[in-house]
Image 1: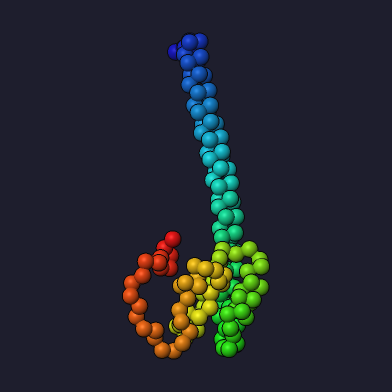
Image 2 (image 1 turned 60 degrees about the vertical axis):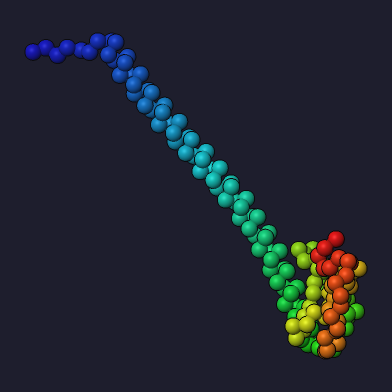
Length: 143
């Protein structure tokens, strides 16, 4: 029995199939590598954003805790002392823009104290003010 060698057409066809499979496999590996690299870059960017947001949140929490401690340690603080202390705390960039303190659940201090906040401030006396008739002036939060 004599073995017959495959024809050159069959050899060429098998070679082309093998080359195509190898090329497809290499392209798939390259695509997966690029996808992995892109995911790592995105994750790195998101970790940086998360770290910056956490830093801002912790900074604001520090300001709030420091202010609460200061008010507890200085129960006789007045509006000027409150504003001065808040200005010192807000020298570094923070997301806090308006700060209000309510010792004993009564709003007594606001910073900054502008025309709109003066209108919103609660009376500092212990008795309640008489009820006024409805007015046409805007209330807190309205333009």
